[in-house]
Image (tube, rainbow, N blue to C red; front, side):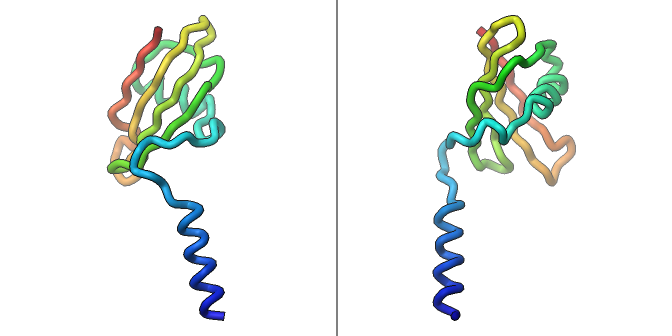
Length: 98
């Protein structure tokens, strides 16, 4: 029984391991509402039409790199760090559009 438990823990750890560099994640990890909240905090006056890709990176918190399209058809990028133990939780917001 103990061996099974150890193998199960090792398997879960291996499956949930995250590399040091940015990794692609499921686009649903960041909702349109969450992205709009971050953009509002950054005083970016844009309306999000769709999220194109989401990457995360473990830093002193969790860094999000989100590519999205605005309702005006612009391709944009938003980067921020979510630090749950600090206030404000969302920090270092950067937004750029092309």
